[in-house]
Structure formats: C-alpha cells, structure tokens
Amino acid sequence: MHLESTGFVLRTYPLRESDRIVVLFSRAEGKVRGVAPRAAASRRRFGGALSVLGEVEFSYREKEGQDLGRLEWCRVLAPTPGEGRDLDAFYVSQYMAEILEQMGREREADEHLYRLTRACAGALAQGLTATAVARYFEVWTLRLGGLLPDLAACAACGRDLAKTGAALLPGEEAVCAGCRGLNPAACTLPGEAVALVRRMLARPPAEVVQPDPTPDHLAAVARMAAAQFLHVTERPFRTAAMVAVGHREAAKVAPGRER
Image (cartoon, rainbow, N blue to C red; front, side, top):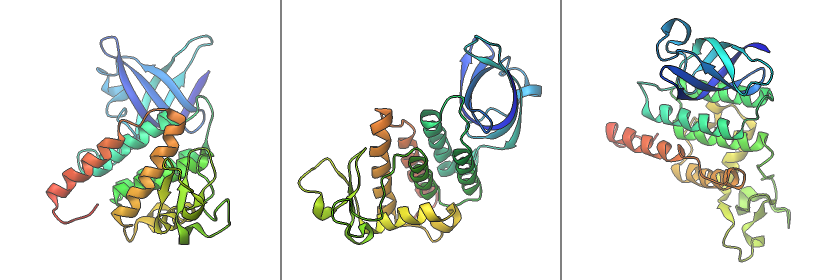
C-alpha cells in the first residue's frame, strides 16, 4: 500500500541508531505507524518535520504482512503550536497528541476528529487561551467518541442542567444534583460549566475562549473530561499534568495574567 496524505505527528521513538518509529494521525487512513529511516541524520527527508502535533504532508509505503510501514518523506505544513515561544500552547499540543494516540482508531479515517485537531492547533497558534483550547478539544473528542452524555436536561426529572448543575458517572446519563442521590462517585458540573460545554459544542474555538471562561469553570470541565476518558483508557493521560505545569510557568513570567 502506498499512501500520500496529510497528518499530525503524535509520537516518535528511536529504533536502532538513527531510525525513528513515527505515529501519525492521517487524514486519509486514521492512525498509522511507520519507520522513518535515518530520521536522526537526514534533514533532506525529515528535517524539522517530526515534532509532535506538527501538521505534515507525508509519503508512506507498506508491504503486506509487515507490522510497520516505511515513511519515505515528510514536509511541514504547520509547526507544533507554541514550540519555542509559548509554553502553555506547547504543553497543550503535547496533551492533544496523547489524547489522539489513545482515542484515534488504527487505519480508520475520522474527518471530524482531524478537522477538530486542525482547528484547535490553529487556535493555539493564534495565541488563544491554551487551557480553554484544551477543554474544547477534550469536550469535542468525547462527543465524537460517543462518550459525552447529553447535558441538555436531567435524564431522571427533565430539569435544565444549566440551571441545576449536573452529576455524571462514566457510561451513564447525566442527572441533576437533586436526582444524584448519595452517590459520592459522581463527577459534578456546576450549571455555569454545563453552559460552557454547550457553548463549546455549538461554536468554533475562537468564539468560546473570547472572553476567557473562568478558571473554576474550566477546572470543572477538566475533571469531568478526565473521568470520562479514564473510563476508556483505564489510566490518566501523563501529559495532563504538563498542561498545569505550563500554566504555572507562564504565570511566573506574566504575574496576574490568567491564561
């Protein structure tokens, strides 16, 4: 099979002295893996094109029966958001790549997820609030994967969850705080955070993060997303902590500025 497509680099790791195994989320075939021969030495074919969450154009060839294909060349279309310039955006890009690697399907194109990734990477490159873009990406990835419950009304009594707040258990429908009962395991979303999620599902990133959502509401959405993802992945994303670290480091540089 020969494939020429665009894609996002999700991860690279060494194979032998100068080769690299590259995991890509391609537009045409979903998640693919291939060997980039002499990637550590050849700037002509791969120089600068294997940074995580950079969007690239690439050529990939695979022989029947092989576990890994061969990445023949790679050209940068858009660099990793924030690399060398914005620590928050850079860390969120690493987090997005890990989510894609865990949630993207092998050899199955997903145009909606690809367009979501491009929109969020573009929002980071434009300097929009990185933590809000991360929450937007989480919410839409859950929605596209069928993991986000309906947050319009309580599944038990029908009350508007934006007014009552929501209680969620992974794999179950959302209910209001009054119908939650005494289950301490349920993740709660205040009504304002429910309204924020609804806005995210109805608008592009730039219209959601300007003006900035409050840190408390973003944190509530982050907790909800983490619980929903954990139900599927069975372990937390390691780069989720990097997003918080990047936020604190940026605050040291610009005191009083909330990112």
